[in-house]
Amino acid sequence: MIQQFSLMLRCEKDDHQNEIEMVCQNQFCTEFRLLCFKCIQKGIHQGHLNDVEKISKLEELIENKNKECDSLIDDLNTQVESVNQSFTQLKRGIRNKYQLLKEKLVNLNSEQINDFLNSIIQLTEYKQSITTIIQAQTKKLNHTFNDLYGQLKLSQLNYQQINYNQNDDNKLSKELYDKGQQLYTDDKYDQAIEMLDKSIQLNPNNHLSLQCKGSCLKMQDKYEDAIIWFDKALLIDSKHIKSLSEKGQCLKLLNKYEDAITWLDKALTIDPYHILSLWSKSQCLKMLDQYEDAITWLDKSLVIDPKYVYSLSEKGSCLKMLGQFEDAITWLDKALVIDPKHVYSLSEKGSCLRILNKQWDAINFLDKALNIDPKHVGSLSNKGDCLRSLKKYDESLKLLDLALSINQQDTFSLQCKGNCLQDQQQYKEALIYYEKSLIIQPNHLWTINQKDFCENKLKE
Image (tube, rainbow, N blue to C red; front, side, top):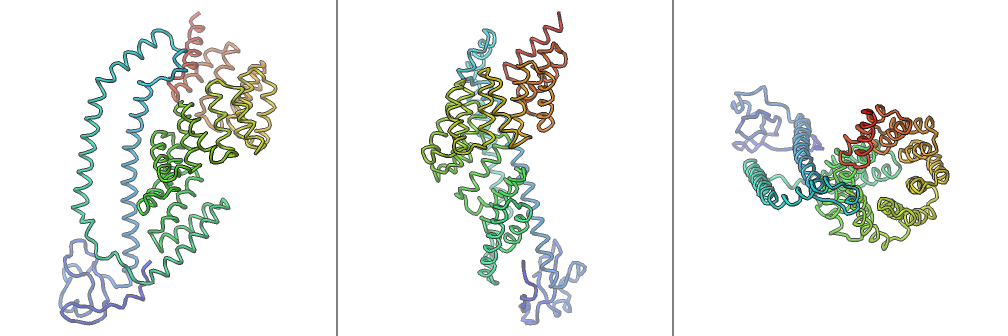
């Protein structure tokens, strides 16, 4: 913030040498904007005196323009994010249509395999046109950016060096960052943001404060807002690993897994041993059904830290998805040896035992998870499905409804509720939940088959 009392400037217009008293804010003025009393007497700025203010208003003007600039940048970020969303949708669609894991092949019938073969054979025809179109649009967009850069004369600055107590401001900015970082560590995110804003105001180039504010917003589930601040930090230090990694994690939490991997790879290019980025990348690969690739990255993280609970449990989860349930339990047990109260590991072990038809053993571990976190959706839905298998339908539906009240988009809970209703021959009601699940996961084969079964039953 500019301290108005330090602005003891002399007017250099026609050798007036009087103290600057006024500032012109007229948008179209081409005169020198700082003026003294003699300038006013000589009629300079006479045509728009309503836009001439006392020099004391300069601080307010600059603050308002700073906010206007931030608003413009936020709008630009929103536009870029919109493009990113469309691009991610395109990439996801291409992957879903033209790729198939061998584990899924055995679940397809001959007609589905024939459709898939027709699609992948046509990919060669489409590949060149897709690449050409994207390259042309990218070139056009880059040209537009370069034109704007030139029109705005962004390379022509003569006020980069500000000498007023800059060292003192930077020092105070660092002190405020340290306080903000401690508040972040103490989970006091609103207070941390307030402190970090003060730090950034003193030194807008303090990338640590920018990154820490992004981290606070991420912990408040404000992922898109967090990305804006990580981007600001990366404009100052494009190789700041924590900003790169945390941006990747936000994109992962927004279900933009391919984009997340791009940013996590940037972090890993700088530091191949950054364990949080390795683990986060494995999570993205898992969500893209690339379980074996995910395990490869988890193994890399476990070489660095064999007791890293998150990687141990995630490897167990990937093995579960590959149908290797006993092996999965082995890795989940390793995680639980280190942290017996790790909810995700307890829940995933319960899930494995459920699939192995050890329903009561499964419920035992799921209850342990729910004793720690009564609102853990995965544990609620898995226990609900165990109770369904034990024909305790009312208890099952109660837990599944609780899970869906916490997360109505959880596909496993929707599928389990549909299955529970189907087991009670309530086919019409079951269809409602299968259809809700398919809106989120339209290619989920099990749900498609269950939906077809219910529809056929209703036709009988």
